[in-house]
Length: 502
Image (cartoon, rainbow, N blue to C red; front, side, top):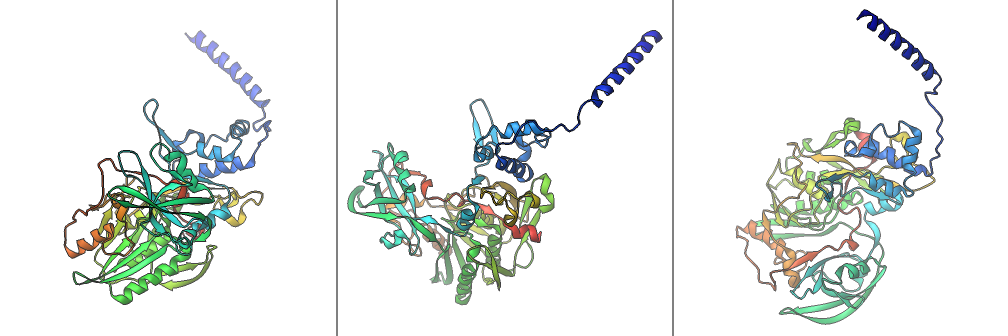
């Protein structure tokens, strides 16, 4: 037995000498023999590896992926377009055979971050209206009704109003067979719209209008009004369409108006509000909650590489004023309402991210009643990543000047003071009112009989929600009109100031 043991030890010793000798001949850091075809791909991978919310769930974002430079460059060179690489790194959940569900519906690649930053402030090429598509009969006919028209826009200048009905684009009448192919015309710079009236289910052609998109800056503080005697109360009503930081002072001015009027109730119409700046959401909450001081309104949580960035957004007493370039130009004291014990929010499937943050963040403090339809369901947010590795990709001023590509990946999840964040399927309304069922009688914002607003006013009056007469049929369906949506519309984002102050 000892003989075998001695022989084994001798063999292991010889093997060890051979192995060490071989290792000494190997360059521990060999020079790469592969050339990287596109340096932007390197920025895409490294930025996503560092910041992406689901980085540990994506195999190709593993920390060991770039350990061997040849293998890493070979992987990156497999993508001719950095955008393709970016989307390949977005998290998908693979379920049963043939089932693939995109967990990340929200991250996107940016071709030109200068243009994107303008769009974040509401500046983009647009017709200046929002439409909703509805199938109105069993024959499959589809119409658009106008949900919103921006002032001084091509739509407004053409005399288009909320509630107008459109049944054709470029003289093609819409139906379930041609909708997908025809709705794309709304992506064109110019489109001809056919307007109709409705009587007993019959559509009658009225006129055609041709409009051309222009660069437009839309004020999200769209409409405000005070109802002076709703069950003895003064009710403020605000249509707010986007959390755009360059309009913080306009939002504050609206609350100055409500404060001067002495409103007792507030109805916040977020049906067209897909989100925006997290900080602006905190400002709005601070205008609404009477006892706001420095309590936690919301908390952001990042991935394991950036837990040092985890931190709260507290209620504020002052707000920052920004210009259209996102540059801070001043500060204002927040106009806080001290007379509200609850909040009414009008909702739709377009109510998302920073709008849902208002609902989730205020509910631990005051009752929040929802009227309308279920919200979108987005409890995560993003930052813009630039090709500036020295700042860990968060600083535009140090970005690589050879290109303007950037990324807008999801990097954090948002919670309220009770650590609640479970609304990925949206917030269900307390009273469901499907606006599209009244497509032939859509009234202006602020009209007491406008169907969703009336639900909130009636609740304040103590009147139970009643059905309203309208032309309906059992198989009524709605269709997306994504051609009129901007990519960032359902976004919740933070900017450089968060990292400077956190």
